[in-house]
Picture 1: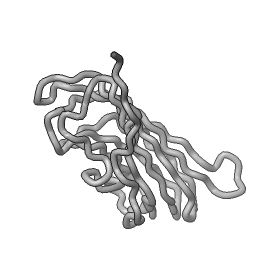
Picture 2: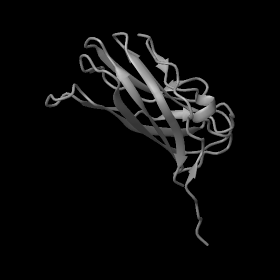
Picture 3: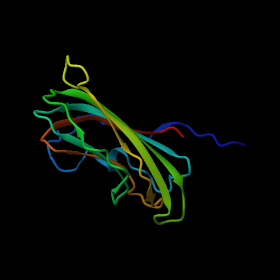
Picture 4: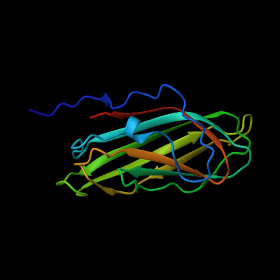
Length: 177
């Protein structure tokens, strides 16, 4: 008999906005233990996790944004984006991102499993101008994972070169299989 998997929302969506991100250092978008935790022994080859998030972004001047997905309690980097130039003078413009993580292999306890992920970030640009928005991709680096840990999670962090006001209005994680 073939296996039958069911899509599941692993975490309930955020019900209140997070405090605005205004730092110019690497900053996690959301509490990973609450919204993107991976239970111990949940990995299996082919297992997919999808993180979706969105909110608003305000910028005063042009700068850059780097998006860094990370895995597990050690926050192992899974392929940071290039530093993308942000749009000048955004005022509460919408943004959203999706990040897909696939388990490639599973091994014994310890860092003997592997995961890889890729994602994209979209933000509106300056209103009434051509080409003012941007799309940014990130990820693409395979990393070791310890399937026995209950502290595994998918973290997505941002680093701005200018002080923004980035608000996360929702985040949740799904597993389609």
